[in-house]
Length: 123
Image 1 (cartoon, rainbow, N blue to C red):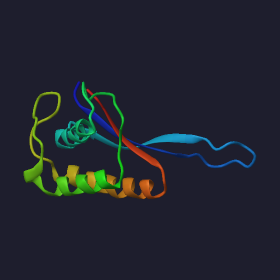
Image 2: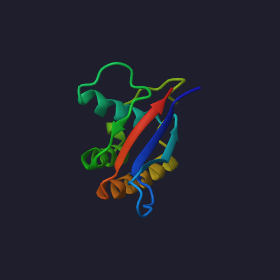
Image 3: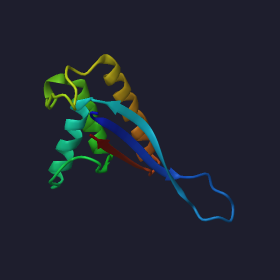
């Protein structure tokens, strides 16, 4: 039980000559109970006018959101804090920061290629 968080990319499958282009969805990041990132994503989602429960929804990530996430991760004083049993406790670990920075780099590359990158969570 708890907060499981994922990032996915939708991109074209390898092309077979004579067959229509098909897309594949690939999970390329997983976080466990890293509430600061989840809270950031929920904040973005709500600022887009969404209401209700931020669970099992897809939030498309574009370059401006990724740039803002990078600034957010690197500045702990900006973290939106909502600790709890399901969402974890404590500060972002060095590993969480490094993993998230790696995610941002990869996500930017996928967005530059024109692929859809998005976040989802399940709790």
